[in-house]
Image 1: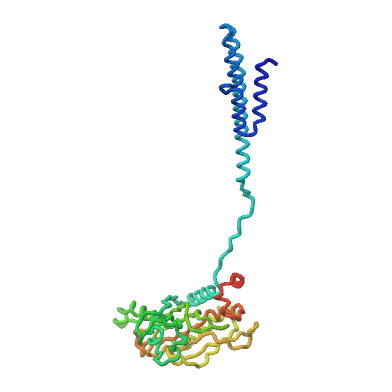
Image 2: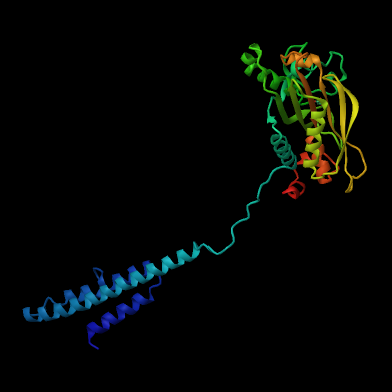
Length: 350
Ligand code: DAH
């Protein structure tokens, strides 16, 4: 092996031994730098004749190019290795399972409200929504509830800012104010027809929503749900209330032999009034009377407050507790579980 071949050989070897780009640049300087061995060889040609310079110069150039080629190859190899290390460090395992995202679902009481709306909707009832902060007028006065009625006492009602000392604002204690609100809207909408002596389309509505009372134990929560029902027309009777409410209960509980009982009661806004009890014939609750709603014929004063003539229009109303219906349907015995927000409880209803 001649001198130039062994020079290329030792350069290639030194390059191969350079483990980092910095090492490699140092190795390069030993051969191609200003004081490098190739440069020394060039300088050594000074004494040669012109012909010798030509052939010697050409040979040195071939060696120089070989060394440069080896350098380039090694640079590339080091860069590739660096890239591989980086890729490995940043590697994503696309075959790993994704992080679990909890699947949400409706609250059991929301499921009940949807069910109530679906069933009454199929019987031609609209669904109305109204404010949870109410005026004394809609919550009590318009519903024929006298000033001295116990339901007005501080113990039952959450009063809030606003209104006047005589008529303070409050958190609605029931959904019954929606009877007035909805009927007034309905009457307004059909005012022209009414004034022209034409028949008014019947009011058939339910109003589900949150209600509030100062009360808390296993069967009472300060926030609870109610669903109001109202049916007003010229030819409505107690029979209609019984028919629709029976159909509702049997559909809601998927129980055709469920029995209803209308037990005489008192509410300021109905006369006569009745509590509605149900009885299952089978299952864990069979044979017991369970109260599910208040109901009655809308009091003439309330019909008047709706803007209608009580001599002409007759109404039937009911108010039920969706929370209690949910407890009965799923066999839950503590109402507070619904509002604690514990996923372990709530997820069982999905
Ligand atoms: N508002 C009553 C309550 O909260 C329930 C009720 C009774 C509603 C009779 C009605 C009704 O519409 O006719 O206890």
